Image (cartoon, rainbow, N blue to C red):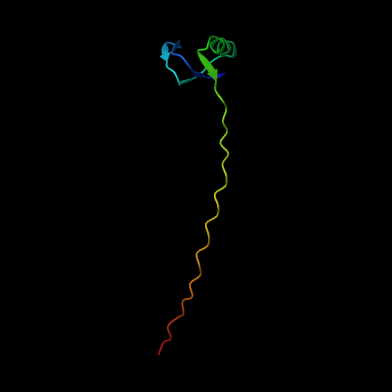
Length: 68
């Protein structure tokens, strides 16, 4: 379970500060949420739109010089 920490906690041998993200077991995560130490990380999916195709360059009317 992915969580965002709301209050500093001791987790896996280090202090995790507010705003940091952790990954823990479901039961442990539910306990942290219930106690107000964390909230569940909202899954955000990036929707990538295809890039628009570049406009073709305008054709140049280049006339060949007449040879004398």
